[in-house]
Length: 447
Image (cartoon, rainbow, N blue to C red):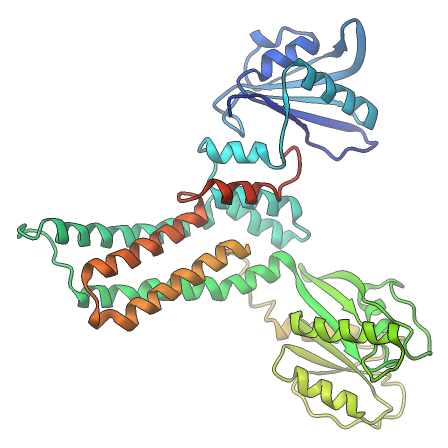
């Protein structure tokens, strides 16, 4: 943390602008060695200066240099950003000069890691930075911003405050039993306290599912027998010719992927190989992959032919998906109907003619209650690490409730401390070095 780091913060490609970020106690001094223009050591903080990056007497690039002095910076350290003309050779050359002048190449996510370790942001806010970078829809951006601005962390902090207040009273009861003016914490008081914490955890977990759908999208798999129009449906939803469409059964041998946004919600769609018994080795691999995706999907679109009776394979598929979120898509409604099927979620379409595709999208919105998801207060926990910590905390609450009548107060205190620590891991108030290293390795270089 005492050294000065540097990294390219924009995609390394041909473009209008490239930015290199430098952070550390010696950031301003190091950049000054390479900068021909105003003396950066004497400028005011949060100012921009025109000049050139030079290598001895050679001009490398015409630049604008932003100088931001500690502590009012992202990392709370001195930060300098060099804005130069976009280009791979020039950007790499300036980075090379910075490293030769005394900088160390930053690790993935190290700028954000320093912001966390220096108390500028907490761990939940740090993870929201990466979520914001990866946002693909406006709603996922809003969720990330709520995490980044600390609104989600405030929700966790309130729960920790409730628990620590109870823990404080328990410890006073244990350590100073002779005090008569303190509140006596009994098993009944703990029993009345637990439901509110449990309800909060259950609410967070319930909303986290909606939050994940808003953030990551609905993982959707299109299944069905060969030649029922699965690829045509994919193309119709994506409004592009993504998949090859022929009248030859078994054309799709592997998974074809695409994404579409429906009312701000991302649909990650997989068109699978037609599911049937086959002796073709390559086709069988595709069928096996299709069956695996069914178990992982948030939504299953099963396509059947309007002009054919259900086959044995299709009846087996219907049985397999009946307890999963699904929609039966009856395709080729321009042909004579020969199919009889009973299901609450049926949409009749013609994928090739784009008939009723909007009806299918409407059905998807209804199935996932997309219009009913609260979008005004997007304080959702959406990353797997945080959600798993809430689940562990909830399990401890259940354990306390189950054993309450046979437990001692000091044993309950240990369990409550564990819950308090688990919540602290979400915000980073409790953490290990290994955990922090693993989290920030997922960040991009220069962030």
